[in-house]
Image (cartoon, rainbow, N blue to C red):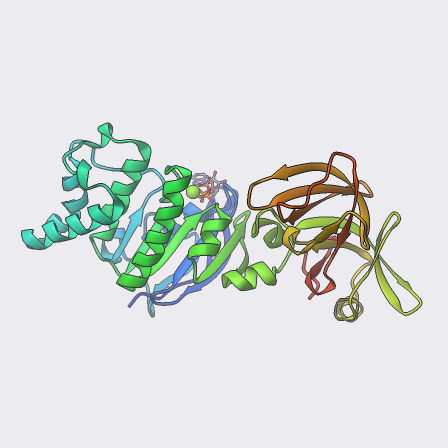
Length: 361
Ligand SMILES: Nc1ncnc2c1ncn2[C@@H]1O[C@H](COP(=O)(O)OP(=O)(O)OP(=O)(O)O)[C@@H](O)[C@H]1O
Ligand SMILES: [Mg+2]
């Protein structure tokens, strides 16, 4: 069993607050991803869970026990570091098996686990090599192997795929997800890659500047982002944001910006009124929900740039000095400066309070 529970955890380095009042409840056998931009406190959080860094205030529990007093080697966790930290004088086989040897696990069992992990990670051919004779991606896989064979209650993985090339990264991400399913352990996984977070996780914790922004399933954070930061971080290309003003006219509520006037669906205008929000809002629209045509109807704009990607086309459209990216199918083509019409789906637009960034929902 390994439920990992962080209660009001803070970490200061001098005056600097690296992790700010973090509450996080990771269920036993859950795959939770911590995601956020560089410096937001992901590694620091993981190191506190591992026992490599003391919390400044707050508590960490494994199941129902506070682990504040427990050193790292008594926490039944395996951590894969951002910097792989392999033993340079040992070959790959010895690196992967070292912890098992220390645990006095019988030799045949060690052999079995090393072969299993090496096969899964595609490094069977490298078992006799020293770390200095490996590429970055190969070292990273050895570091993963070293964690996997220990079969701990909880895995802490800090950007374990960051040094792999794009193709290997995508295949390893599927392998890790499968591994999690097969071995049924708790995984806490750190990445700054939103696609990794979306594809692998049961739940995602999105952090910024040491603060938790939202904690939810991939669907929750994608479809119901709590604020502008989450909305802009999850999804690729990111959600479009257009700042404007709310205007009421003849019983209808409009989002306006210059000559742009877009009727807001009743569910949102109702929320605006209930919550007594200011009229300065940010309209959010995901690129994949916008229809586009050469003849309208819709919001007229001019094509700033078109980027064909084979499977789709990204079209950047300028309207009232705002740029909106549209993800459309490859048949749609437009040239620089051409007028096109965008059709926003009223069921799929978002509104955010311009000042606080909170979603109006
Ligand atoms: N030992 C330390 N002393 C002072 N500041 C630190 C220390 N460790 C981390 N920090 C600061 O705390 C903040 C969070 O660091 P952390 O390593 O947790 O970020 P991260 O989210 O893992 O970023 P990255 O994606 O770049 O790895 C950063 O601003 C960092 O400079
Ligand atoms: Mg880090």
